[in-house]
Amino acid sequence: MSKTIRLTMAQALATFLTRQKTVIDGKAVPLFGGVFAIFGHGNVAGLGEALYQVRGELPTYRAHNEQGMAHAAIAFAKASFRRRMMAVTSSIGPGATNMVTAAALAHVNRLPLLLLPGDVFANRAPDPVLQQVESFGDGTVSANDVFRPVSRYFDRITRPEQLISALARAMQVLTDPAECGPVTLALCQDVQAEAFDYPAAMFEERVWTPRRPQPDAGELDAAVAAIRAAHKPVIIAGGGVLYSEAAEGLRAFAERHGVPVMETNAGKSSLPHDHPLNMGSVGVTGSAASNLLAEQADLVLAVGSRLQDFTTGSWALFKAEGVRMVGLNVQAFDASKHRALPLISDAKVGLDLLDGRLGNWQADDAWQATAKAAKEKWLGQAKAVTDPTNALPSDAQVIGAVHRARGSEATLVCAAGGLPGELHKLWPAGAPGSYHMEYGFSTMGYEIAGGLGVKIAKPEHDVIVMVGDGSYMMLNSEIASSVMLGKKLTIVVLDNRGFGCINRLQMATGGANFNNLLKDTEHETLPEIDFAAHAASMGAWSRKVASIAELEAGLKDAAAIDRTTVLVIDTDPLISTEAGGHWWDVAVPEVSARPQVNAARREYEEAVKGQRL
Image 1 (cartoon, rainbow, N blue to C red):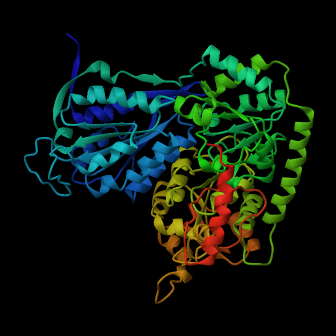
Image 2: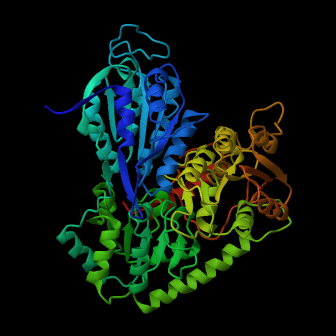
Image 3: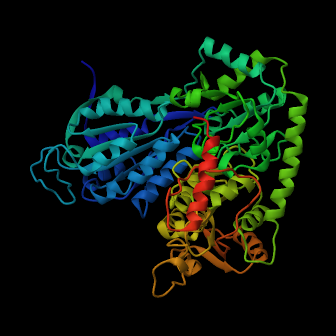
């Protein structure tokens, strides 16, 4: 008879998490870096007590906002290149639904996140309990059903023994390179407290190492033939390059074959900024160098990218007649997009095999010369916009100041608004993972919480968060968490008094200045928000600076402070970098009473003719 251990469902879950390991740099480490928890009546008695029992092996972190703590957990996984992850738990009701945005973020970005929301009573005896959502037509529905479309795997645990199979399926998803994404296990609160004789084998230590799928021989042959036939090839490096630890393989491939590399937001830092074959960002927020080459390329090797519209310029960027695409991706769904030749494989394995099969083949000398000249020109353009001036600073000038003060060794964190476009173009990233941008879901409010997750994953790194006033206002409470946990962040708040990025888009599509900048909203009194005082009230060291020079000095002072620091600077909401960039498909109204909209519509109709369908 097999050995069993009698535990409550919650105790079994917590114990199981402590037994999951991975190997990094030859050393076995816990797969789960901890659990972020905000307790309520749906999880405090069951899972809360269970987490207390394992607190020495699995730390529990107290957060201030459920969405924020889930963002922090996601950032931890991203900063760990998906090799490690975290769990998050909330009560039922608003605590759970607060995490749905984060679940969608993890889903879009293919990042592992274990969501453990409390749920209603499985026995239904006390229905309706506090915060229960009742469906008039379906007795099985709870608020947690909103996680279904944004979870790679969803389960509701209504009996304690269901945990055995649910955890097995959850771990397969969380660690699978192709299916990776959020897992939701909704934990009925009465079942959390119910005991069961669990098989002891369930709690044996398990070491999870990356699976590296090999490509199909026929697909590899087709990819090699397509590359050999190309004269003007380019590589798009996506997040999969970093997650498969293929940065060194990418560098070797590019150097041996003379192929220019351009990076997505998720893939930026795959090559150091100063590598001669790194053309920088690509697409809507692309450098002039990358986009020039992308428009002329006869072959695009997309490595580990899901090819979203910002990368492809809404599929109008690749203009050469007969341009071919090769999709090197572990996920077939991504590898085959837009009639690409799929090469379904781990990125590191795929690049190594392509490299070996191509031998001494190289891109045309003239193409390599074009790339070199384009990069030199772009570097001059980037320096011109990041150098300080006496005017109200632009985002680009702030980026320049931050880099001059702290350098490429820092890990830069950002997410939404106008900053991602400028940072994608202009931030000189250093080592792989030093540029941490959440731009798959473009989630306002991710920045500060994400910085906390990065700092937990990389405690020895200088973590710098750049955030606009709009995102800061949406979610800032994890400043207090960072202070409480002793996880120092350097936060730079760029105050342009509104949603400057969307205001510029509104203007570009012919719209009137309306409801984006604070001055263009319905108001009686415009607020004068003291962000520095607000941050200080949560325990941070803070300072409002009046110029780029003061910002640089403040950043150097902040480096010596032992806790989270916040620097605030006013910026111009209308200035963005003109060099580089590409059209983005944002539909303009077909008819309007405003001539500006009609003019924008005519431009839009002309632009969509360039899309590859």
